Structure formats: C-alpha cells, structure tokens
Length: 163
Image (cartoon, rainbow, N blue to C red):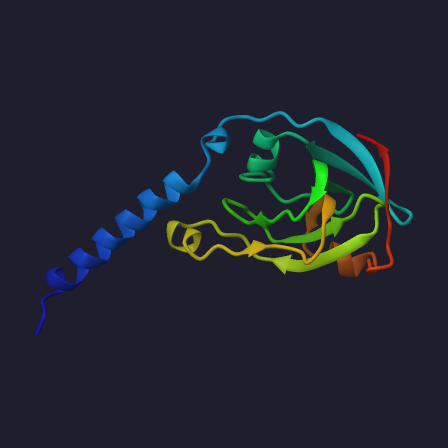
C-alpha cells in the first residue's frame, strides 16, 4: 500500500505545474497592473447603465478581472473595431456575470446568464469560454441576475448615449 507521502507528492507536483501553467496563460498586459477604463452611459431598452469601456486590446484582456461585484446600474462594455465572433471567459473574476452580445445595430444576438468565475489554478485549466453563433460589435458584462431582474430578451435593444 502507498504511503501518504507517495500519494501527496505527485498531487502537489501536479498542482504546482497547473498553477504555473495558469500564470503563463494570463496575458502579460493583464497581470495585476492597473488599467484605466473610460466611462460611458448606455441604455438597454429604457434601463440606463454606467459602463466601463473596454475599447483597446489591453482593456479587453483585463476586463473585470479582480474587481468587486458591480451594482445593477453598472457594467463593462467591450467595444470592438469591427463586427466578428468574439469570446469571453471568466479568468480571475470575483463574482458571477450575465453577458450580452450585440450586433452593430444594437440588437441582442446572444446571452449567457449566471456565468460563474474561474479563480483558482485548477479552475483555470477548465475555465469556460463563451462564443456566440453570430457576429457582434459589443459585449456587455453585468452582475448575474441583471437579465432576469430587468426582463432583458432577444428583442431588447442597446442604445449608446456616450462612450
């Protein structure tokens, strides 16, 4: 029968390797450095939101990583230069999110509810990435429960007030 040490050493070694691989998976622009986000105002239907605007690659990479939970009247709007298939993942998030993808006309093309964060080294390896079926120009991340609380549907529409 294997001793405790014979069992624990390979497990600890594997955890260290997974942790190191997870750290290398974080793009260098997002490693714990401060990223400033411009602010803007949008509406979904008649619901106003103050948003942090992620409109450059370093800002999009950093996203809401390491931030605390947002109130329901705030979110992060990812803005892309051209329409395309854009994915989002939950690396280093501290709270669950609802995510909404919009096309260039502000129509919703995809929604994900109550997406749970990936915070630990073991979770990094299995951290989900969400990809819509169609092209989008904007992605909105809001606190989990937003979609249900405000009755957001595929018929809801994004209006940009200022970004």
